[in-house]
Length: 558
Image (cartoon, rainbow, N blue to C red; front, side, top):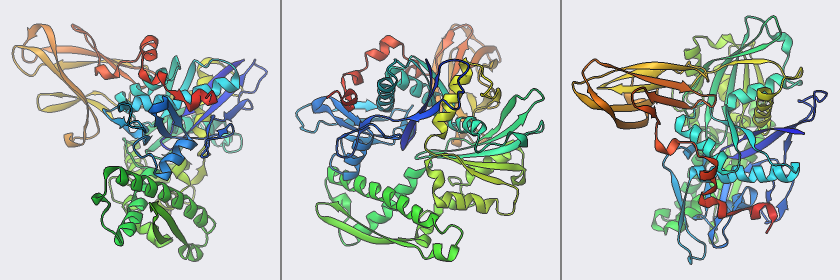
């Protein structure tokens, strides 16, 4: 039996899907299923049936244990251990971000964990759950990430998987994974609508912490192969359900402080307890109100009259009570629904339409995916933008399992050829150009239109006389505004002999299948973008201190 594993590593929740494949007589799509992820429930009882793993960590360093999932989320939401709980890992991975975790008893020294290690603990939970259910070691996996993840974030995610015990790791962009599932979903995709000219599909992927928009032209050639040509991707945008929770939480906090002094007058630990409690209740209220509103989506008069009382204890018997309404929430979240803003629900749609050089009426389908895609305000905002276009089909892909299923199909397609798996020809691209600073100017070294597997050469023209230390400063970005660029790395490299102004140094680049960039200066050997982004070897991965921590009792062992 072969297993093809896809993991949707989410900001809010993670899922895993598997194709269990025996031989060619098996239909891979019929063998595709989303598995449970073993975790403790909120009462600290083993839960063997939870499909989603909440992306929250709770560290008990006194007992060298870390809890992931429902139990950790309940600890965070209760506000009782704010200094020992961690969330929002995905949006911070690949940077310098690390958290200090003190012991609960205070008898042990605090420890620091970076986001790569935290992500590895989620992935280890999934790997151990898989191996317990499948009774087999799982070495290879495809993990989905935001399309706009940069080089550091991609390598950090791959290293997290290596720390978790996976040996062969493929990375796949989340919108592409959603397309892979959509194309193979017999209940959603109509193959007859494809032609050689193709149809433009806009994938709107909004999760807990990131928003990705891609436009794909999907066509079918005379042999029946399906071509997926990603003609535009939006740049990085950290906008998702967490942002909405924090805005609503800020409103709840203002109501709580109305009859009291500011929480800044309290001890830091009390502030953290209050914030954790309020943000968790804001998420709960948002979901409950969304369920109420969805019943009246086509009845605007009744929808506008909906209201919901929200009351809860914030800390030590001190409570807050308020009422939320449809107009109120629209006002609270108006900064994200504005048609002209730069960090809004609509901004990446405009960017991708412009990059693809097409008009709104050229879109045939809009696919909504991600946990936040079912929030009423997301759908309303998008529909209003396309309000004059009658031919667009709006389709909602299962926000729980579609992305992990697409990743599993992708993993299968890399290794097996089967009649039930469509032959897909994927033409992909990055979300940003990679630029190099030479003197005071910025040149595009690697355009975002390159496909994984491509390589090339950039000719670096020396800006000064008698240079032996060559400055290599790399950035991600689009357009001509350097203030909007994101630094990758900057350093000086010593050459074997000095070069003069206008001499040319050739820099080779290679763009691998995981969209990780590798550079070499020909004279100087391989140039690694940054030491921290080097992929871990298996032996290095085994030395990491997280391995002494039991994850969920190493899946209920203790």
